[in-house]
Each structure stands twice: as structure tokens, then as C-alpha cells.
Image (cartoon, rainbow over all chains, first blue to last red; front, side):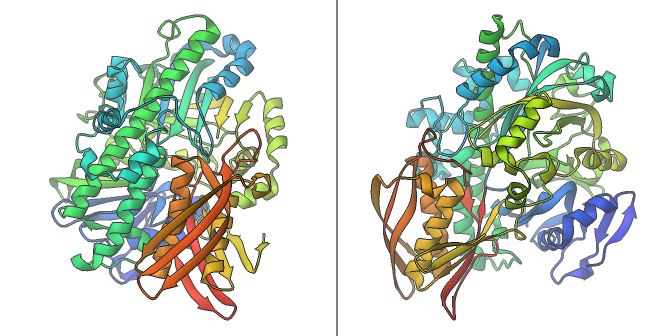
Length: 481
Length: 148
């Protein structure tokens, strides 16, 4: 497939390269990252470019890798009148996302209690296959969680009022409509509020090192005040509830596509017109699942605060356990963007891609509006994570989007062939990182060598201007499923 | 990596979706292929050798095509993992019909137990990506990608 360089770390695949492409495909990558993405990503991003109503270009962020339907790292915006909504452009883990919580604690204070802290967090936040959550819900309560997301948690003393100001969309998507959620999704998800999941989901205690303070002025705006400061990072989503919402509607879209005359290159791109009964139903159910994910991260934050308060014998407010930001990386949202000089409402799909709104955007919380939206990028459990900030370039080029993580370089089985879980845990302990995991084979699958170099991904974000580096965080404690 | 269970076989494909789990399945007949699919899925979640058989469930499904019956079958087992906290490495399956297709199964396994089982991954969903189910010289073969 012909790739045309169109600027530093930007490549475009013209519409002539695949029958049915309505717009070009554009990839943000260095030459090395592009080579690592392989032909699979090029095939998938050009499949996306064929979907009805797509505008601008089908995009792939620097952490892109082959997924199913959209590539991971895929972004696409659709007209709301002629465009489609596709579960394969969001992923089954609806509103999988990242939350960063700051503390006033320094590493020197945490180190002596680190093992206890990790053990207590591991006990307090259920993780792994088949676990049940710690929030007991009646059916009517669950409907309220679907409608109100993190707001429901705050109304039920499972969060602080000010948390809501630091969550994308205030922790509640207004389009949520429980009427379009199946009984199966309800049955599957009602017991899972407050669970972490498995795979690449984690709860991490992290430290910002002196070399990790890249932009001290912007860092200060986000509450990052000094080297040695301790943070908590959370990566999880809507759990079985969202997975079932995705399954139900994917199956339905696969059946109704012929009725709308839609043909796709990959069945996982099954879709329906946004302005159709099926598209409307999915958007309502998907937004409900996004709200459940916001609530999930919120109640886990509540548990984190309890554990820190207990271990350090001080109130969580005294310890300064404030949400820096909570950002989604698997969603479709209605947003206003400028296309060919005209501002319009678009349905922006991000699958393994983070919203990265720039300075001045109304959706950025007021305290951050002058600098831009925080962007939380999860790295591997060994190497650390990053905080970036959204830019006006992202608004102009990528529908306000950037990368979401390091991106895998090898399969889970390949990682397990190269790494033994128990040895990795011991090696990490020797490097000062305490790990508690439900599955040691799962730890091996998430080894640092299975991921791209996070710096290489962030470097491309910065060179292309789609987001800017503020700080990087080094893990010292990790809880996994 | 190859596993054998009766005449059914499965192997994990590593070049389809690297963050997820693609499985290639072979069965002497459709019943065997579907039983093998259940075993392969259970092995994604747990080490099957650590799962005692302490519970038995009867399942019945219907779908318009064979491949969507496989999609629904694995989706049902993933659903039960979350709703009931149970995993089923062993299945006796009968697939009948000529469109729609009907599945009747007795599955055997146990409640998930972190204290006594080696836990692995928590599958989220079956995908339609590269889903295939066809007859072959040795019976039936299928490919399915599970989102992890």
C-alpha cells in the first residue's frame, strides 16, 4: 500500500489505494513506529476510510497496532446526518480510560509502607477474572448509575463533588438511555461495579522523578508540584456490562446492515446509520456503558482514598488525594469540529485513542482551560506512564485526539514465551516496584518488552504537535488482575 | 502451541490481533468443533487442569448461520463467566438444523476459585473479525478472535 509522507511523522494513504475509500487514511508515526505497525494497521485504517459519512481522514495515532475492526489507535469522525456508528470503532470495553490521582505524599514517606499499601489496595479493589465488585446495587440503582455515571457516586458518598470537574464530560454522558440496554448486559454488569478487570488494566502507585518534570509550569497547573511526589494511576473500563452492550449491538448491526445498503471490509466494522433506530439505540446504550465506566473508576478511587487514609493515618483530603483528570480512550462522542472551514457536529469514534482538546476549548475544565486538557497515557507496568496536554494542532488535525498508550509489539503468547511471571515480579521488586497480581501469567503478558517504547510514541505526539509532554511517572507499586 | 481433546484441536494464532486472542479450531464434526471451542475458551480464562467438575449446566441456543452460532456459543460462556462466576472446560454439544441452526449442550466445570485455580485472562467478548467456520478434509475448522 502506497504511503505518502505529508510532513514530519505524518503519512497518508490516498483514496486510490483501496476500492471504496471515501477519504484518505493518515498515520502519525515515525518511520520506526510505522514499520512496527505492519500491513495489518494499514489494511484496517483504510477499511475505516470506506465507512459511510466519514469526514477528513481515517486516522491512526502513534501507538497504533492491529486490532479488530478499527486499529487500536484509530480515530474517525462521521457526519451525524449521513454517517454511521460502529461498535468496532469503540471496542467492547466501552469508556476504557485512565484516571490520575495526585497525593501530597513524597516517595520517602511512601516507601516504608509500600508493601502494606500495595497489599491493602490489592485486597480492597477486586481484580482478575470472575471477581465481583464491592458496591451492591438494586436494579433501580443500576439504572441510575447508567444515567448519571460518576455523579451517582458523588450523590451516594462515593466521591467528592470536585471530582466531577476533573472528569471528561463531567463523568456523565447525557445521551445515556438504559431503555436500550439488554437484560443480559444488566445481569452481567450489576455485580461488577468497583472491579479492575484483567489484561492491561491496572492500579499503579507512581512517582514523578526529577527527570520526569518536562514542563514544570503546566505540571503545576495539574497539581504536580515537585519531584518525588506520589500519584495513583488507574486503567479500567465498563467491565462485563460494556462488553455485553457491545456484543448485543454488534450482533444486531451485522444483521441490519443489508437493510441500509452498507457493506464493510471487516464484519467487526458492522455499523448502522447514526440517525437510524438501531444507531440511536446503540448510542444510548453505549453512553450508558460509558457512564458505568466513569462510575467504576470513581468507586475505585473511593477505595483508594480509604486505603491511603488507613495506611497513613490521615484523612484522604489531608493527604491531597485529588483527581487530576479522568479521560476516556474507547468512545464515540458528539463533538463540534471544523471541517473544510465549516464547524459541524460530528460523531467522533476513538478506539484506543485519547481526546486531547487544546487551550480554550469549552469542554476543558476551567482550571485547565488556559493550558489545555490533560491527556493520560498508560505505559507498561515496568517502564511508566505519561501526562500530556491537548493542543490546538490536535483540534485542527485529529479531531482533538492523540495516543492512549505505548501499544503492544508482540502477542501475549510471545511475551509468555520470553518472560516468566514469578521471575518478572522478583526482578521488578529488585528494581523497587512492588507487584500484586491475581494471575502471574497475566503479569508475564504485560511485561515491558511486550510494549513499544513509550518515549518513542510521546516523541511523535510532540513532534507532530497533537499533544505535548508535561510529566512522566515511574511505577513503584502495581495491582493487576 | 497445540492441544488435543478427543479429536478436536485448537491453537492460538499470534498474527491476527496481538493484544487479543485468535483461536483456530478443528473438529471431527460440528459437535466436536463446538466442544473444542468451549475448551479453548476455558483455557484462556484458567488452567483447565486446575478446574474440578463440580457443576453441570444445560444450554440451548439458536442462530441463523453456523458461524453466528459459534459466536453466540462462546458469547454465552463468557456471559456466564461474569454473571455466575463459572467456567466450563468440558462440553457435550449437539448442533442440528439447516438454517436456523440449533445447539444443545451440557457443560461441566466449576465456580471460579482464585484460591485453587490458576487464573489467566478475563475475556471480554467474541469479535466478528475474521470469524470463519467451514467444512474441511478432516471435518470442520473455524477461526475466532476473542477480545481480552
